[in-house]
Length: 107
Image (tube, rainbow, N blue to C red):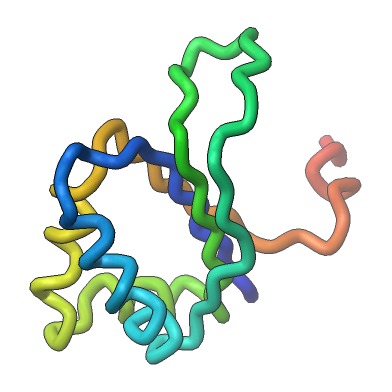
């Protein structure tokens, strides 16, 4: 079942995330993932206890195994630190794809 990885973050004041982004597309595609949305914070509507992040990336994966393979791929061991040190306030959540919300409401 498809898995979505939602990445929310602020850019650090260095060039590391730019280096990450140049290589990450090929690394993601190698494991069957694809970036489905990129975004920059347009407006903070407020009402949340979580401070908004300025950047959003949404990646679709074929499933948990593909996502885990991306994270654990030894060929890309030097890639993930670029993301980690090139960002601040990083939030990364995964969501299972749903075709319909109704099953969530069954008690």
